[in-house]
Image (cartoon, rainbow, N blue to C red; front, side):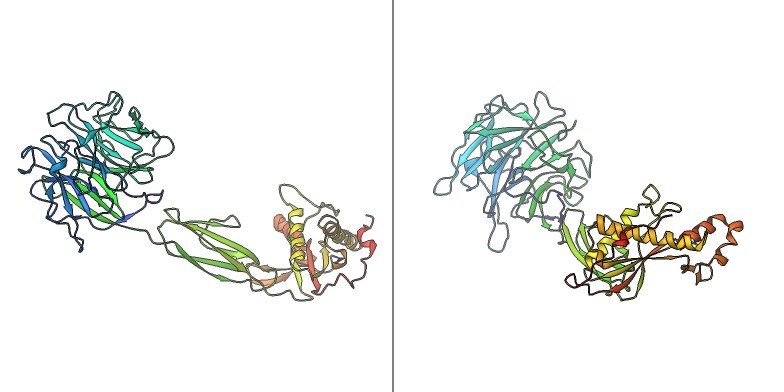
Length: 533
């Protein structure tokens, strides 16, 4: 089919999403008003969509005979049916002819220029339609350093008349024909330049078609592989006119095991030429079906107890284009979240074509209960000291900051800060040590985080109240007394230390939720004074 000569295309419509995602309806062959026993190719629609100009080859009614190529035109009736096509005699000569592009108002058309004498003075011409609707004789457009060499040439002109894309065998072509561009500045066309090695292959690139936004180029090639001998591709302009994305195949609905080329897009319809069902090519069309809008919904479970972390969020994507990416405000990228504490979370879902949707989710928890003891985040101290440990193993300041945040979120909350020690050592020394550790937490929250001192009471319990932990083997709670822990010193040294560590804990008891700064008494000054070792 590449024997078709001087087949030209027009830019009429806008490009779609940068992701270039689309689904197409099943391709259909246009009716007998356009397709015949001859060969049809290079469809071009008028700006109003009511006329289709195309090239017919091997028709005895062509002006140059059965081996000639002429421009034919069909009109669409009110029912959307293309009527019997007629030879556009005013645009045709006894040479190969083709209409390439319309200007925006439809009264000017770019055509293959020929003076009717074989192989002489060929190029690109502009024809103007008069008031009676008749096309005038084309006038040749002057393009520097542009000469038609050989028989194969194609081009498209943007509908604003500013950009010309050429398919031709140039001096620096990589293959048989490459794609070139020329720009119109103040009515003067520039010397054609190569579109670059990314978009041009060692094969041939033909039948260019430029989107209305001048950012997406459709063309046919046999140099990038695909479904058949020649496939239709698209590429997106990245910056300059020689900077394009790697060509993408239009897929197996448009492309067939045969020869497919000369694609144009009008509105949501694609028209192109294919010989998939015959020796000679016909014109086909398919409707573009827009992707479903991305829609998501969520269901969530709130925390069941104050200070707990059993909240969860389940996200369901109702529609969109898979696969999906998930981004949570807490840095997670899973579809769902579990083990959540009270707080605000936001999910942003992005689908395969770049559509995004975000949803805010609030996880709540029951209000604090007065006299309830809560385990504060991990705070550790140096041995026999109330100095906080902040190293690669533990960051006590991070934990203390979470306590401060809790108090900020609940401005009426008042806490007892309770520190405990393990059972090793002297009871009285352990009591004094635990008091100093509670005061260290108090001092940090008051002096470093600005928490009102009257909302806090440091309390030391020493080793008097062992922790209760869940034994995974018996599924029951065990009190970590000295009698229980001591036997592990000889049988399981690691567990022995781990159980003692569990006793060295910091807790908070909620002693009120109605703190009033206007009536609350001053905090004792000795809360900031440590007992000597």
